[in-house]
Length: 374
Image (cartoon, rainbow, N blue to C red; front, top):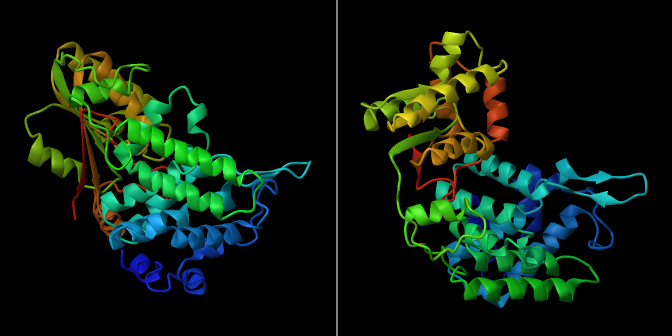
């Protein structure tokens, strides 16, 4: 990403060009004046903290030793790690400041912003995953599901990146618990190294073993689960105009299709209307294929993990192999294609879908592909 390449600290001075960064990004300027919890953030507002975190990262020998491309990607994640705080911060009657949900919302915002900037999909998703998980090293050692958390983070990004991001976040604040938090981050890194998931994705015996590990709490990750699948369900995910129909015609022409667009037309439901009847009809049609052990395609926007889980969970219960195909195109292509459709989806609906868009990740299926159609 050229804009981040140009703004990332570089040798020999390693300076953070903050004024240029503020000028380049409105979302950085939006951080100014946003309050924080004074106990854990005595340095001031979110912009001050973000600048200090970026400067702390630039001073870390471990970051400086990384290849230039890795440095840029990690610097971008630190720059964006609290991007959602202006939208999540609240002050209660007692003056206590909270920013609940800012990691998850930050993931959504990062995806939209980097998509609009034309970032490569894998690069964008790595940064978004780091933002979503940036608090994990602070508290992960207290979690009973630590192993699954660490494995998932390794499949989405890199845990050593996560440790460096957390370290910069901690060092970029004035906080009485700095030493304890840094110890937690270091211990998380040691745990990930022991679990073979620090600087690479955790390996599993098979895609079937990986799929069921993330669906069954407490499952041994080394267990080579017997593949008892009866059919394959291909779950599509993508904004209107991403090219889902064209992909089906080219890659699954002979399979039956559960199409929400077709069901909406049959039921007379607008894309902007209540979709519950459409979803119910789709699930009933899907059950018919699954009972028969028949492979099929599930064609819907499925932009959120929750929506996809309704599809993949049903398929898993019927012992189907789950393949998720995430299709996308640049913003202008999406808009142009949509407007050329016989029944365009309202722009307001697309905007709402973009705000909820979570790209499928490797924990959601036996196979997950990210494809750009333009």
